Structure formats: C-alpha cells, structure tokens
Amino acid sequence: MVPSGAATSAANPARPRACPQFVSAGALKQDPSAAVPMQLVQYVRTGNNKEAWICRERDGSGLWYQGHDRLENWADEDGGEIPEEGKNGLLRPGATEDAKNRSYSVTNDGTTYTVTPRSLAIGSKTYGVIQAYPPA
Image 1 (spheres, rainbow, N blue to C red):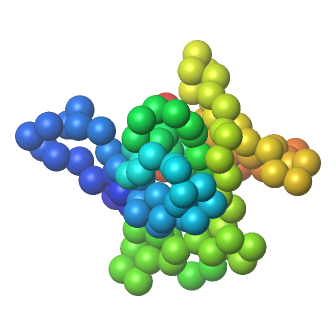
Image 2 (tube, rainbow, N blue to C red):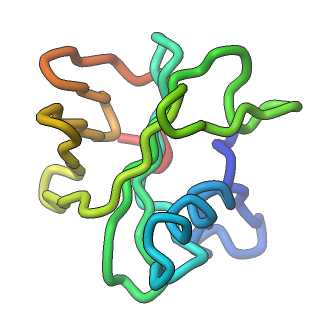
C-alpha cells in the first residue's frame, strides 16, 4: 500500500510525490504565504496507530510536520480520516532536516517529534515503523 499523497507513476517513478491535500490546506490556514502544493519528503506509519508526513514547500523554502493519531481509519483508506488539529493531528512548520541521517524534527510546546524511515519519536517515546516512504 502506498501512503496517501504518494501515488507513483510506473512511467515516471522518479516523479516527485505530493503530500496529501489536507497538509497543504492546513499549511495555508497557518501561513497564507506557504508555497503549495507541498512535496512529500518522508512518510511513516507505526504499529501504534500513528502516522506522520514530512512535507517540503513547493519552492523548497520550508519543511512541515503533519502528525496523525488514527482514531478509526488511516488517512489513505476509504473514508480516510483527515487529521484535525487539537483532536488527532498536529501540523507544524519549521521542521529541521538532518539529511545525512534522513531525520526530521519539530518541537511543539516542549515536545520534540522526530521522523526517520525507521521510527517516529514523540518526546521520550519511540515507535517502530511498519511502513515508510521512501523506505529505509
């Protein structure tokens, strides 16, 4: 299964993949000057009902973190669940990139969220990944 917003084209597998539309829409609500649509940098899904996207603004100017705590459905399933800020989602600009280690982090209210192809860390808790794009 390919994550939401990461559909691939057999004719052009190197084509940049878009982040889900709800990430770009949410970013525009927070920052009307955000360069959308955003491109997918990293996606992870854990076995603990969590998923996260790292998205780069179209012009390369910024990275965003979108987290989702699944209540009923994954975002890419039929009837997909769209993360809601304050309920089961967290969207934040200003994610930082450690390209050498393929690690992306953002801090919100003293809690650091870190995404790698192998794990999602939220504060002191680390969750193993069962799906990643691009893979580790």
